[in-house]
Image 1: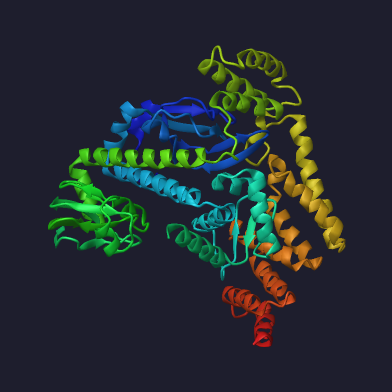
Image 2 (image 1 turned 120 degrees about the vertical axis):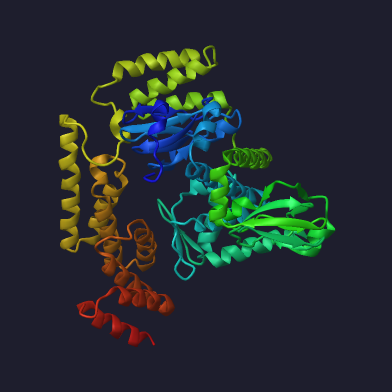
Length: 215
Length: 338
């Protein structure tokens, strides 16, 4: 955030100590945050297990859905170290957005990305069968900028539970679909990632399924 | 100067899937946004078309984020469109801050719609369990409590009670808060476990585990040096699993490198490849990268996959300087594969 001077926003700043909760999943909230210093972990609790959604860095925004509509928080946010957050609600959000053109454009880009990500996730859910959904999740994960593909091979940083989550399936259903791909020697499952031998096969499979359902 | 473009009825401004870098504003006329990818389909089926009125921006998200366009834009009547370049758009925004607000509002509407669509699609799934919000909230506190993260558990239960003062679980929440408060700061308290690597407390418990992690790593490395690969693998694996603990996390990168080496020495070539693929992505600057690529190439060779072996030998050759000793071996290997 070196290029944007945020000293005007000191009155919106709040400090958090390491391990402190910023908000809980399911909590009602109307604030939207900009991380100015430190790192924040977003996590979801599914039964007895924790799933890290992401680790946010300086310059990242989060909690923006609270600005848009009354919706409970979709994850728990915890400070991983000493953090300083700028906190905005609907009323003072306009001040942030119009403070300077770079900030305005940065926010527009943030929203553009969120819309793109949500629409991409929805495309997965529009597919009818489990194998197609799981395949499209693999394709979606491979489209991420931090995944590097070499000749169709790629390592996707996701667990079976992550895949189930994106596919909108139960863990068992996702596991079944993934197991058949393992048996077909198309993927290998590791504790913290899935190795895809040829992502292009999955792309073709999904494209064929979409064509079939639109006819 | 921003260009003003003229479009006849049914002509296309951009197709779905196009990558554009312009910011389009409708000056006069009427534009339709269609989810169809072809112009015949778009002009034929008007039921799904969203209309753009004069003065409105369209197709912005794609240009902002370098994504392909979501929809095809076609002129529903003779229209005039202004196409701004990135810097012209930025200048416009500088002069007129209300545009940003208007566009953000438009984006909020789109994001809400996409969010709602997701909820509708998920509702159709009977196989996915949807905990109700109150139970889910209470469960967050329970998760921290069971994980002995007492500070966080007290905080979470307090937040739950603030929102649901007479909730279904309020009695339990109060009881748990008492329990957790009593245990805060005790030896079993893991409230500090969320922290990044590096010992941050000087308590005896921490000092003990620093040397424990280092001890484990040294033992594993010794086994590796003694070529006791199966035992080394088990020990390295255990260290990797403990990586949530800050003191173990310091050894994770090295451990993951040795895990790959061990797998290779155990001749588990498929697992080696799978493991090192992830390693290369996670740690692109690792000091052992040349050796990793060499092992990848040899593993593919051992599996009889010549094309992939070749790819990795070539990648390695590009990394190596002309004087590097490994270069001779790599060139020889490549000749052998041809």
